[in-house]
Amino acid sequence: MADTLKVAQYKVSQSQAAIESQQSINQELEQRISHLRANKAAEETRQQEEKELLEGKLASLADMFHHGKDFYTDQLLQDEVSSVKNEMQSLTSKVRQTDTEAERLIGLFEALEMVAKKNEDEKGFLGISLETQHQALDLFEQEKKAEEQELVKMKEVERQLLTQLEE
Image 1 (cartoon, helix red, strand yellow):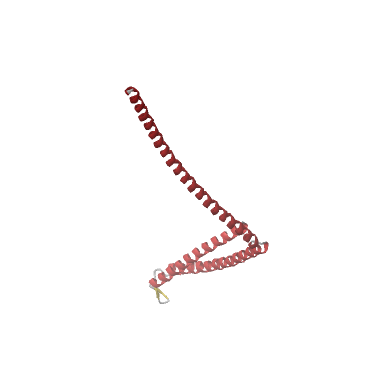
Image 2 (image 1 turned 90 degrees about the vertical axis):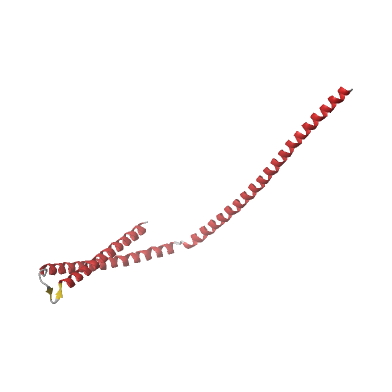
């Protein structure tokens, strides 16, 4: 009987160890399930927020489309084209004026160059020293360069406006 008691005690201790092991496994699984449920809830919340954000953006785009449709009428577009054409004509006129001014300055510059070459050996021309003449010549050259740069800029603007009109 003592042997039977020992065998029974051994089986009880094995059963208790198995029960404790199973309880430990069950507790770990419950923690994992709890963690997964929390992750699922967080993901559902994130997806709901993204859905609401997307719906807001779509509503905004729809509103912009409706307002844009009202804003961009044929008459408004024609007015805009007319305005750009007028601006282009104005800039073309300014380019022509600048071309004329540049040609005039080039003529003056060439005349001054000829006078300077002619009177190079003289100390003064009409009472003006060579240094003053050179300073005046330098000023004319600077003004010529500035006018040429302005002309290039205006031609670039004209080209851009023509490109915009063609579009």
